[in-house]
Image (cartoon, rainbow, N blue to C red; front, side, top):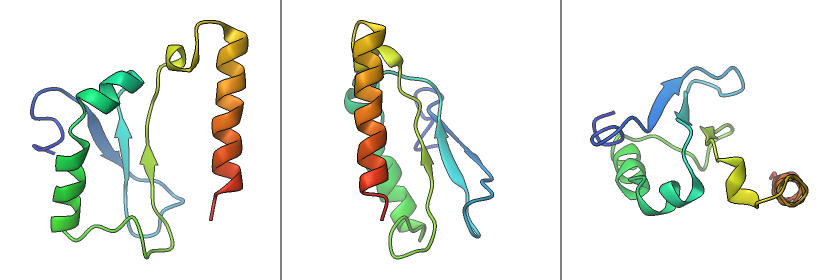
Length: 95
């Protein structure tokens, strides 16, 4: 986890019963801006590929990301609408 947590605690690994013979990467709470600007995703994914991990061409895969509600808007109504759109997107494109 040195690539992931070099400058701060970003992710930890855990077992997920829905994933066959694998693990889940779980992020600590952070804003969407932090994920985009600071989170070392390219380094993380490059290292995972180098180690032979797959998130494609496999039957199961997991990535658990926490996103601050404020990233979805300033009012609860706007947040709920945005969250509903995200959920719809995942349900529609699950495959």
